[in-house]
Length: 135
Image 1 (cartoon, rainbow, N blue to C red):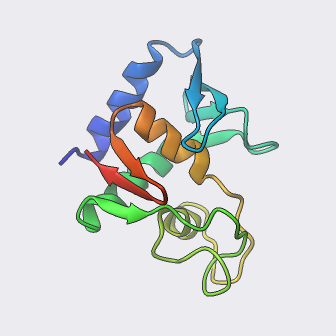
Image 2: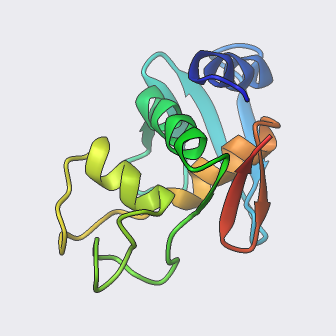
């Protein structure tokens, strides 16, 4: 299985250089633009919080490896972490807890769409309707 450092290298290689803007297809249709930045990837579909720090991708790969290479992405219609929304054991829930320090019941900014699309676009993951699978 791919390790975290190799995954980040693959993503960076897909961008070629820091100034290049890429158009990345969303898994459910449509597109967004993304640009490699020193601290992560800047995307145009997250409003006032466009940065996806590199740690997100590292954590997602670790999480997938701990789940035998596949995990649920998270409920696309919920905004709260935990029992009343995004499952704690989903990729979205893991990122919210580990990277952003969110707790059960907290409101979560949905990041799974660009995260999963970048991982599929870079050839690191495959997807099913609500699951990412590490290649």
